[in-house]
Amino acid sequence: MGIIKSKYVPEEVRATMYNIFRVPLNLIVVIVLANLGTISDNSVFCICGFLLGAAALMHHLFESMVKQSAGESAQTSTATELKPLEAQPHEKQVQAPA
Image (cartoon, rainbow, N blue to C red; front, top):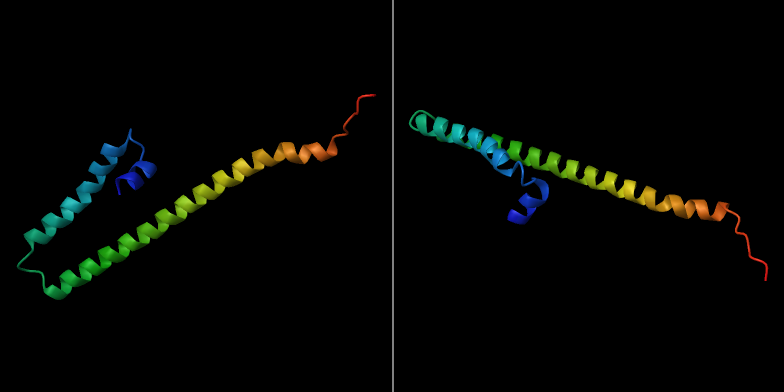
């Protein structure tokens, strides 16, 4: 898991990003613990299901962004690699006299 995190989150902003994502998590925990006796089991189950669905949606969006970014970088590198190869057949090669 640490390798994946280090691949997608630059080290310069890693601590800030993790702290920003801890705030909503801690808020959810405080709200649930404050209303522990007043929330029914069905409501807790629905909230957990909703949050799990939201996490799955965010994961899907993140994966599509990563694939799109990888595709763009692959196209850019392929295009720069192909330009010299495409130019060679159009150039006339001059043979030196023997």
